[in-house]
Length: 283
Image (cartoon, rainbow, N blue to C red; front, side):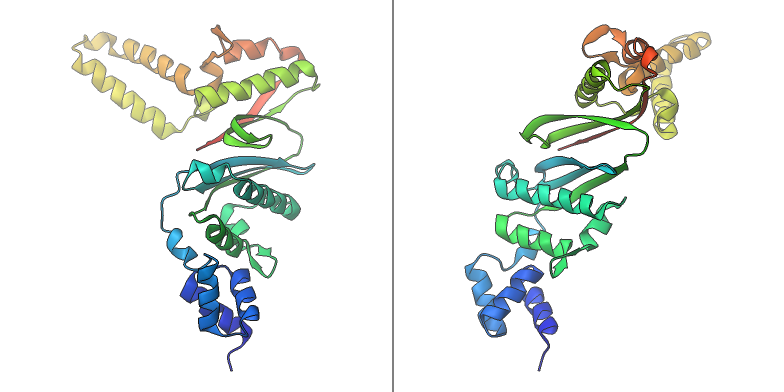
């Protein structure tokens, strides 16, 4: 006689439903596989795995924190309608709570393999796919340790106070976190969400990106017929413009276009305000 574990596995393979749904269906149908399949189909829980092949380009990003870690989670859905539903948002909040409870620096594969109730979080995803009726994908998981840094964040197109379509997170240090620091850090998060910089400063940029841009700009200058003796000078100007577009400190500050972000931050030097890192996660 097959063990309950074998029956659950067989039922999952045949229906694509989650572990917990299969277990419950077997219990309610005296461990009869065919009756359990029929019951799952009637509930709309069968063949969740087929939904997992569909594209999921909508969704939401959530932010969660405790005294030890700050977490960003991005889950994709197929439609914006589903992403705005309480069922989806509660699911995202529950995932955030589970990461905080785990309280360690993990990636999305680690999260999916964590135990949850009588299965794993991957099983939890499968059950939610069946419940919502759309493919759901854990697209991104970022866990930052709260050591000596402070964090500020901004949510664009929010669905809940901690969930939206775009979240920018700024990590910084300062001698004294006061109202001025709260204000500038929040405004910088808004700037990051709007301007989407690639890095904090020039030295932080991916070297391959820099070399690729130099090559492109040099080719454009050569093709324009400029004299060879001024090519390097023109290239320097082109690269300065490039850096002013993709690096945070060199971008024009969105709240004062006449100043760069670096110039604005110099005004807060008395607080020893220093940027450490930033993250931008969006749909």
